[in-house]
Length: 187
Length: 383
Image (tube, rainbow over all chains, first blue to last red):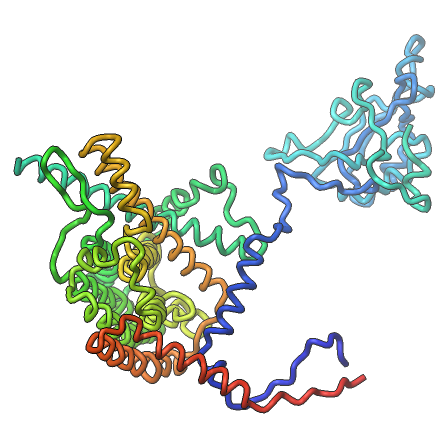
């Protein structure tokens, strides 16, 4: 099998005088390495420069609100059932009178917790959600934790801030029409 | 007056010593940086801006690692090995002239650790002692791989010292002095020895690589064959001393190469610079500033050669041991003897550039032989 045209047959022939002197070959080699010395580096210095990971990257979880700022989640528990790592747990509660501007439906999640040590960021919760409430952000990673009590994320960390709304599509990125995440983009 | 001279000399020696250590320290950083850049990476860039504190971090790591001495090893020789290596490495920079002279009132003090009239012999002597460090350390480790590495180091250094010494004999013949300062002063302006002794320079450079145990001649620490070579059993700062000694040796050889072949602190137009500075700033200040410019030029040359050492290290693969010995004994020694003979003829008949004759003959021979070589048959493509 031949992959490239650059392969050379190995021979054991006597070297010529020029080859025995090594110097021309060494000069050639030095020219190649100095070219690489000034070449553009391929490394991305990570914490300072972050690469755009694409619109389908699965990062930090978010519990979406709707256009009027009401929480979408109804604590149906489908995400918890779908979760293969059993990272999600929740406590449901009934919406009281006067809380209509807080919660979209009659039922809501009083407690919604994701254990980030268990989560494998598979995105099945996002797919299971019938209310388009839980999403995995494409633009934010879960921060590093050093203690176990920092691991469980509650509603304070998860529910979307109205001042900082999350939109899945990136205007800078060229959208491919066949990408399912775009057609289902968060509002 | 005696006291002022002593004080200035003392300060000078301390500064030169410190600069040697600092450059050796930052050579470790530069080596990794150059390696990274040649391999399309960044190299160390986490500790401080551009990784500038990396040597400190490395030294800290070295100091705090476990200092291990094998139970069957000869303890005192085991400790003596790295001490000898670093001692001899530090000693050799004493005779290198780093600049012309400092003028203080009526005193003229040469920028040099000590001026001795056998400077180059002193360097050779000290460099030869350096092999004791490797040999003692490798033997005292009580480990076959260490011993093999040490033997390799010893035989390699001894073999290359002959070529090393013979290649500078041509220079000594042309200069008529063993003092490095005298050799440098003869290359005043742009009359660098490189232009008279191209072959000697190439032999000297290659032998310097071998003497420093640097790639492509780093057989003593050939990890694929010898685990770690002579420092297999070493850890902590003892290992650090061995590695550090290598970098100091690299700095010293760069300085020697720059002094012997590239004119040391001489540069074209130095007389004009000196006259302008002394004319505008007064005798003492102008003189000292002109000396400083020369020193900076010398350090530029030294840095270039240190870079060249690294550049070659990340370009060439390691030689095989028989290739190394063949190159040393069958190529460099005859060539350098020929160079001495031809230079002697040149001196006799007053032809300054006689050494170029060998280079030209070699180039012609190489061209003829590659023209006469059978062309490699083009292999038909198999599909």
